[in-house]
Length: 440
Image (tube, rainbow, N blue to C red; front, side, top):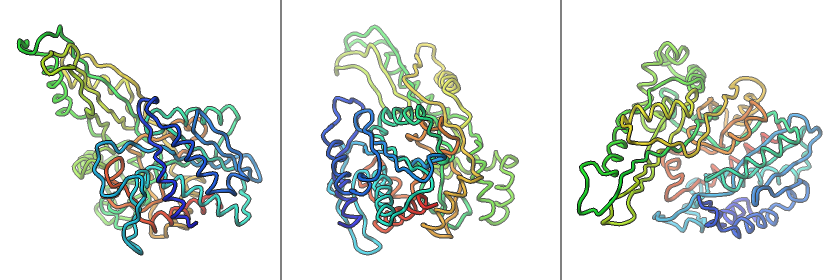
């Protein structure tokens, strides 16, 4: 079989994670594990494997030394496709187009089986060539990154108990993109040196209830709607966080004046830079402020029944330097209504910031140049979404978030959406990146 054929077979296994564990198809994860064993026989003959927390997979490839190992992360699970309209069956892994236009359409093609299978391809190829890594290589593939992250938490705890202290941890995150930073013409490898915190807060209003034919002047639903609109109209303040400062300062060598001067001293030009980044679009706006958006609304169970409790779930993504306590204070000030309760359901503060200089950064930058091209500029980056990497920050300060795929804006927009896809040649180059990293 070719690498693409193996990739397509693994994409066809519907390892969908769901908020309710009772709704998860465990058989799909068992099949996925068995398929990995069959498709990558050398990896499973030479690496030690443990099944953790039900379906997560932890591998150890013993090298010449156990000190300062490499730890590569990815996740097996994908988000549901319920209610989405796809041009292709999301689990058929159809290939559309030919040559440089050949594209695989499937749920998980990018998030995150693209990286997971590319790692297996790189390891299997290295083993076939007799490669013995200088240090141990650990592979940790969670099974519920999209929901609870229990698999990653358990694997990180195991590594900590065994005293494993990686020199470098790499998970999904930024990609190779065009036009991500104003003025930079070259493609940029956006390597996450930190990620925003993530939390869910509930806005809750309550009343006595009753029949909908005799509503009060301010029912619970109306009070909640007013709170939601007030929150939308009062966003968190803009701010230049250290990872974004590093991104701009690093990019200064690749832009013309007057941007170069502004980027070299971003703290002096922070008000202008944050205003521009906020106005450029949702992705760059999320680099300069904590974001909060209502994602779910709940009210009455019946059409003719007044809600006794109305609830809005607020997804909050915390900028580096903000905390869960800061977010709660902002929500209270934005809502301006003591009869709206604000409840933290769950959350994590932002991750620590990893260095964008030194041996680990140089190792990643060399792998980018070797596999993806000297014209690709590695830039430190603030990862906007949450990943399993946040559970491993206690093992080392060198935790990075980067998927080695050159993605267009429309391809990035398809994550968690209909028509997720990846170009075949882009995915194959990603294998070369992991191979270069294993040999570094």
